[in-house]
Image 1 (tube, rainbow, N blue to C red):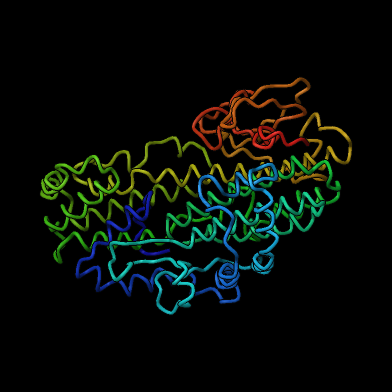
Image 2: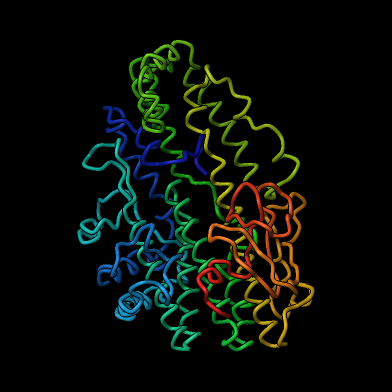
Length: 485
């Protein structure tokens, strides 16, 4: 852990870039900053990093039939989609990527280096990098390699469906499991945007697996479904448990915060009015463009009453340490309900601090969703195995424990008491309102409470939202598409 635990920012291209202004001081320290950012990965052997192998295979991939983005990604690829034939051919033609994923699943980290010094020119040219200081300007920070991970995720979804359509279930899920494990490696990146993006991709990938289990589980052997639920999904990473406690808060943003403090204070620890106003008016305007007018004048006034470098550093430490302790605690509990150090921080004396850390809770929300997706997928595979072997859905989820899936994965991260998912048998067709429209379900339903901490009989579904329930099984997306089980 770095000596100064300071803060985590919501949007790195906006916030961290704004902090690392292209001042002489920041430029002079850029090499040292990159050295610090790369230090954790430097302690991992090259053979335990998957990025080089993965990106080498990516360079050889053919162009997807559609541009990967909102309309074409791992969550909306399926055999009934428009142009499925072309998508299926694209997946089949890129088997080398599948091999690279399988070869990389046992690595410790993804290991994309920060900066481009010493990076293979081919990777730099294709944007397979994490750039800190684009074109020598430290105000520009980008992670274009995340686009490659999105494309790889789209390929995996397409190839899993292609293989399942051909009845090759074990090769399909072997590829899918490898992909999950590589994305889990990416979750250990040092910067906030990287971590948040990787966690989101992994959460989406779990949801795709449940789609596939719902559509093809009735054709898969109960033995293989049980293997997925007891020996594959639970071991996402050797050091993980069902609560994914090993995912850390991003360390890189702490280093960036140090640079911020050094750039806006003079050598004697007093606010440098001009730099302070320029930095934080730009930060505010970048995060909320409509507030640009008058921002510089406002921050110039604040500079005159803002806390010193020492006081600001202590406040950053206090706020971040508070969040860090909460990160280590159960998802919900007595301390989580208490006011945060941030919420009690003077919004004028520490205006810069308040602006920087206001959206830190986004990480907590994504982790809760990811834990639910993880446990929900393990449990869903076990439920599918139970039905395949015994010919009926369990009337009590406890009947599926141990033999069909580990009990510990029946864990609801949205429950204040740290309890279990809701599980109900559905003897009559029941409607669930969701982002996919109204979906009718039968058989059984597995769902989490969501951030309102209440169970509402799965009447409405919201994926990691603030209210309603988080339906994990059956697959509402697959049902809405008309994919029969």
